[in-house]
Image (tube, rainbow, N blue to C red; front, side):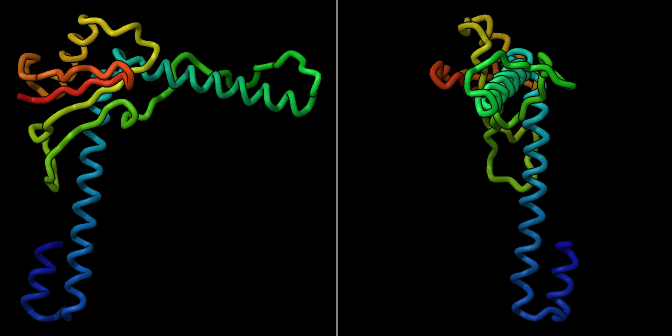
Length: 174
């Protein structure tokens, strides 16, 4: 597409106002390609750490709580005296629910149009409240999982001080 735009400009078949639209179109294609590529990498990183962060179990817990409170609210509207809530249904919630990878993994990449795995500078991982108080073993396993995703040894990663309030930690490549 870029080659066609350059050839059309060289042949002067496109007016000067159309050049701006070609540049905008090419920039949009690169932006969409970058978004798609980073989304792929985020999903791959999430697949490496999802068992440690217990994200799917937490999403199932949130769905069950949401469904319970919705049922309670609807029951109170129908019967203000407050009777027993029936949570039954055709599709009861399960113990695992698909989580959004971007809620639990964030990649920090330089300003490149098509980032590669080697271009990832750091990875921020967020864990859920279902993880017991994180210990050194937990952070060690998390470091190994992130290193496996980045195809480096665990010694090549520097783990920043974990933020226990926001339940996240950032791993930076040396």
